[in-house]
Length: 316
Ligand SMILES: NC(=O)C1=CN([C@@H]2O[C@H](COP(=O)(O)OP(=O)(O)OC[C@H]3O[C@@H](n4cnc5c(N)ncnc54)[C@H](OP(=O)(O)O)[C@@H]3O)[C@@H](O)[C@H]2O)C=CC1
Ligand SMILES: CC1=C(/C=C/C(C)=C/C=C/C(C)=C/C=O)C(C)(C)CCC1
Image (cartoon, rainbow, N blue to C red; front, side, top):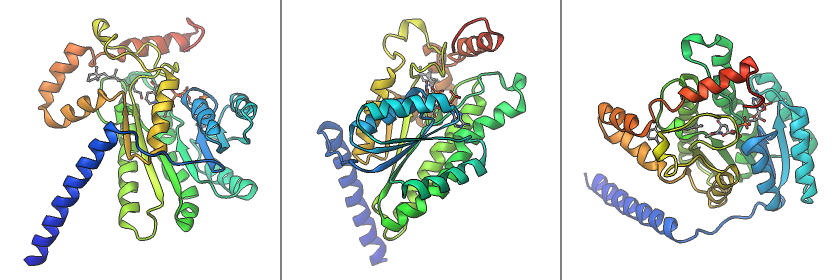
């Protein structure tokens, strides 16, 4: 009984300390670690956030390993990194295929050595209503956004653990914390990614001798990369919560990664949506979604995507 009481007091002290230090970190700028000379692998590096992550890590002095299924776009990213005076190595890989991941990981290890920072960034979305969507497209979302996290981690975590040094970044989404209509595949995969990140983080915390392996979960709101072109909330509120500039999103993410922060929602306002989903009754959330246009925000995205498929517009 005495031991339980001592553990309880110690837990309460820990709780108070962690809350206060989180508040202090939110106000003061935390110390950022150096990634100079570190080998950093980014998936989905051929475009959008992946390319910007590559350029930001290059600015921090990292050596880049760039993975994408689009060889040409990936080479372009490598060129941009080299222009900054950093080393970059582009690999063409299909993240829907487990063997493609394992084979390319073997090549990276043989050709370049151990990866220190892994940024699981690549992501896809079907962009169709569930009942009208081909099964393969739904499966692809799960394979790229969720299953690939298993294979990537199995391929690169062992060397990080052996050295007690490394960082695994999961680019999930606010749609891994709360959901909306017409993106069932995406929400399932991103809720999966969030669960994966949390469980992995717990595993590392409960294991001895791996406190040097860090994890960060990144949950952005809509980002202007084209992936969710057309997605919008109620017009009058768009000024209050505008889609994110991709560079801003990546720079905020970099701050969190370099501070070894466990999780970040971008913008911070999204923490409210996350907390209210957990605290309020379902119907209360539905009412706020309706007011803010969060319930039908994907309608125009799906329409835009359909037009792209039909060739009515030039780019998504
Ligand atoms: N854009 C947004 O609004 C938001 C995005 N996110 C997440 O951020 C991450 C990056 O998104 P964003 O930059 O916008 O997306 P983009 O579509 O711009 O870039 C994703 C990259 O991943 C590549 N990719 C797709 N499938 C595969 C595959 N099977 N194997 C290898 N590479 C692949 C794409 O290649 P290709 O173009 O040839 O398909 C592309 O280069 C994703 O995880 C996304 O879910 C999170 C919140 C909001
Ligand atoms: C649902 C919902 C909202 C809208 C969220 C949107 C539009 C999210 C889009 C996210 C994307 C595109 C993520 C990609 O990974 C509000 C207005 C915040 C209010 C709370 C409920």
